[in-house]
Image 1: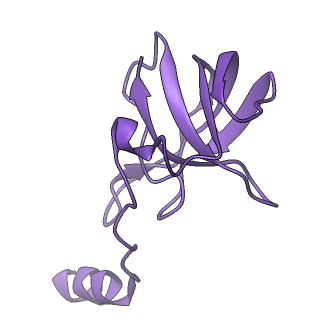
Image 2 (image 1 turned 60 degrees about the horizontal axis):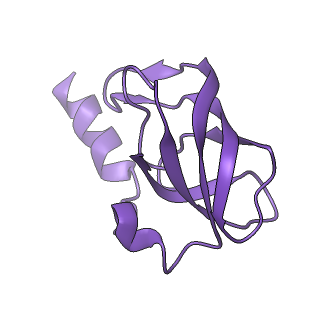
Length: 112
């Protein structure tokens, strides 16, 4: 069993270091959206990943930089959108987003 886990760990490509964390992402973000998290669909993964690849919607209450739609659908990823949701995602959150041609991307988010 340990041999299989070691093989998976070695085969997993490491993610590049995050370009920023928290409020330091403001300068790199294309948009800064503030709002509440809704429509959470959890996708927890066990060994060897131990990560929740949740899908969720940010209902934007204010846009502090750039242009923001009323709602933004996100999905936690391995390297992109790497920060996972808190166990209880209630309250206001600030998302530091990047424009992309595909799925919505965030550099990071903080409780606001």
